[in-house]
Length: 281
Image (cartoon, rainbow, N blue to C red; front, side, top):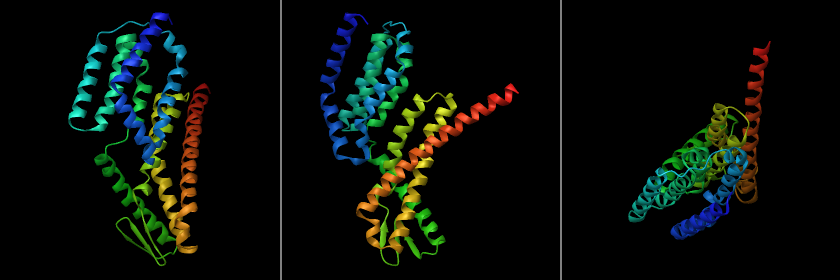
């Protein structure tokens, strides 16, 4: 890379940081205080690794400035202004990614932007979902998890009565709150499977299967966690549903989700090998 290109990149980075400093500061603050999006700290680094991972391919792309980048930047600024006027943080933060895409297109060309579209899109994982959308997803997940868990607990002979997202046992009541809806593990697992799918050496449809598998896996493991918590509360005592055991169960279930994703990856790779062996014979 020529020195003039390095200077250009540094100037653009400085200008971008200056324009979005307030937005970036508030976003990082949300990562600190909102446990649902604490994984946001890792997303830029993972996206950077995605770019580094494809560096050999990127070096082969000719750098040709494209005027279309100006229009993308203007659109990004319009999204930012709209978000600022409407006090909508999600739009203001999303505009950063749009503007960054425009800068890449203007500085290095649309071919480079196309090659970097996945790492750029991945950055959306670091932006907290608007509360109105979050609640639309979290509450149905709470009800679903509570219903399946209560049915499973009943199957093992433990008396349970479900009232909305509250499970009434003989010795205690368990509320499936927002943190127990599974959406927190879902967002984190989507971020991890997205990176894993991008870096894995499998076909495109298998990458999508890996990425989307985070949804059923996160929901299923969360139901298992709630079911086990309810059983322990009934058999051991109410204290088993709170404190250290509750926190540890969350980590164990999330780790189980990661293992299931990896097992799915192994299965997908074997499907490809089996198909090739069959065609060879």
